[in-house]
Each structure stands twice: as C-alpha cells, then as structure tokens.
Amino acid sequence: MSSASQTLTGRLGVHPEATQGKSRSTRAQRWDRLVVMTTTPPRAVAASASDLRKTYGAGDSEVRALDGVTIDFNQGEFTAIMGPSGSGKSTLMHCLAALDTPTGGSVVVDGVELSTLNDKALTTLRRERVGFVFQSFNLIPTLTAKENILLPVDLAGAKPDQEWFDQVIGAVGLADRLGHRPNQMSGGQQQRVACARALVSKPSIVFADEPTGNLDSTSGAEVLGFLRRSVDEFGQTVVMVTHDAVAASYCDRVVFLRDGRIVDELRSPSRETIGEHMTALQVGSAPGGDL
Ligand SMILES: Nc1ncnc2c1ncn2[C@@H]1O[C@H](COP(=O)(O)OP(=O)(O)OP(=O)(O)O)[C@@H](O)[C@H]1O
Ligand SMILES: [Mg+2]
Image (cartoon, rainbow, N blue to C red):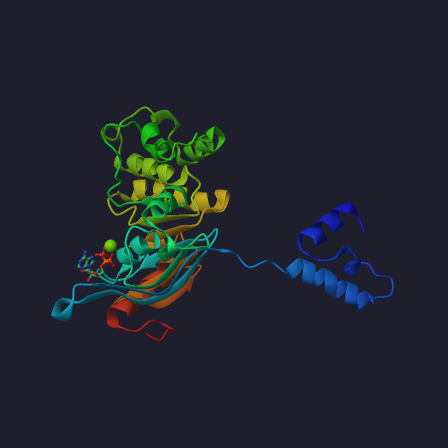
C-alpha cells in the first residue's frame, strides 16, 4: 500500500491491513475501498436547542414566544430561520446566543450547556464563541471600522491574529475603509464591518437577526455574499433570521417557525420553494409537511 493511501485510511480510521490482506477476496477488497470512498463523518453540531421554551408575562397576558423548539445547527452550514412576525425567530436567536434566558429546555453551544454557566462564564462564551450581527449594525459611532472590528478582541484582552484579521478584511472588502467611522460609511459597508466584528474572534457560530433588513438589494447581496463565503471558505457556522426569500436562498437550509414552534424545513432551498413554503405557512399548511 502506498504511503498516501496509508495516510488516507489512517485518517478515516480504517486499519491499513484491512484493505490489503492477501487471503481476502477481491470483492472484499473492493467493498473496503467503497466504504473508504463513501464514508463521510457526520458533521459536528455547533449549537443545539432541546425542548426550548420562553414565556413572557403570566395569566391572561401570557405569551409563549417559544413552545418547545428542538433543533441542531451543524458546523459549516448556513441556516435561515423564517416565519411570520411574532413567530419567535428573534427570541430563538437570543436564547441560542446567550443574550436571553429561556423559561425551559436547554441550549448547548460548542458542547457547553448554557444553564450550567454563571454570569462571568456566559460573558466569556458570548465574547469568544458567539458572533452576533444585528439589523441595526450596532457599531460604536466614535470608533473607526478597524477599532469596531477589533473591539471583541480588545475587550478580551487578547492580541489580534493579524493573518486572520487580514483574511476577514479581504473577504469583506473593507481594506480601504478601515480608518472610517460609521457615519462615513454606507449602510452596506457598516453591516460588513459588523459581520467582520462577528467573525474576528473565530466564533463557533454566528447569529444574524435580519442582517439585510435595513439595506438596499445591492448592499444586502454584498453582506449575504460575505456570510456565504465565511461558510464556504472559513467553515463558519451561520444562522440568520430573514423575511426575504432571496436572502434565505443563499443558505443551505431554511427552518420555518410558527407560534413558537418549528413547523417545516427545507434543504438546498431556492427562491421558488421558499416562497411556496412561506405562502403555505401563512395559510396554515406546508407543502409535504404536517403543520
Ligand atoms: N420582552 C418581551 N415581552 C413580552 N413579549 C415579548 C417580548 N419579546 C417578545 N415578545 C413576544 O414574543 C413573541 C415572539 O417575538 P419575537 O420578537 O421572537 O418574534 P419574531 O419572529 O422575531 O418577529 P419579527 O419578525 O416581527 O421580528 C411575540 O408575540 C412578541 O410580542
Ligand atoms: Mg424579530
């Protein structure tokens, strides 16, 4: 066996002798090769929710914003969360990103169950393992683009990884805007700064709540293109809330929420299939799905 194939079988966890024994039949050897070629390890889970519940108010004014949500977000996938206004999309994101505390159920981010963490550990997790992009950019107006992007790293008292910083800035196309303050940039540029800020600490997962909601279609496409590249080129995991079928069509998967529950899901979505599912959601039944 060549050293290259030994390395390959070693990486795949197949003992080298299993593919070369003289007493084994040719058919068995072919089967071994087939197993090596077709066995791809399952993707690891970046974040998950289990029977997640969030209730606001009590008695007559009680609102069940989340009513038992169970979901996994695989590493290296771009997921959209869609659903009517008030269906619980932002509440789900905030609970997953440790920005809000659920009433029941559990959230695991990067293998850590959030309810086991004290306030200090939650702050560290939010800073180091989670990136968040808000609809309204949330940049600090007195800081330059570069200072805004490096803020999470500075707050952590860490040294920026220059190579990674340059890679992110290159991907987001902001190299010539680093000295500008937010009011000297367009909305699209500001949101790209916010995306770079979310990525600079190499988080396990990035959450984006309607990141293109305040942008025109050209600026929106720039931001979506960047989020897509961060998944394809850097293996980033991204979860994005959106009302827009075009934005959701950049994703690998779309999850549909209604009344605080997951009611439908699409893989490899297109604008057309997303539109059909959204229409079905409004009228109460999804194509091929039992609502
Ligand atoms: N702080 C709060 N106090 C009381 N009710 C709340 C609070 N935050 C959210 N809700 C309620 O929880 C439900 C889910 O709200 P959420 O903001 O998650 O919806 P959404 O799907 O993000 O909607 P939108 O598309 O309009 O942003 C809504 O009925 C909302 O009124
Ligand atoms: Mg919302």
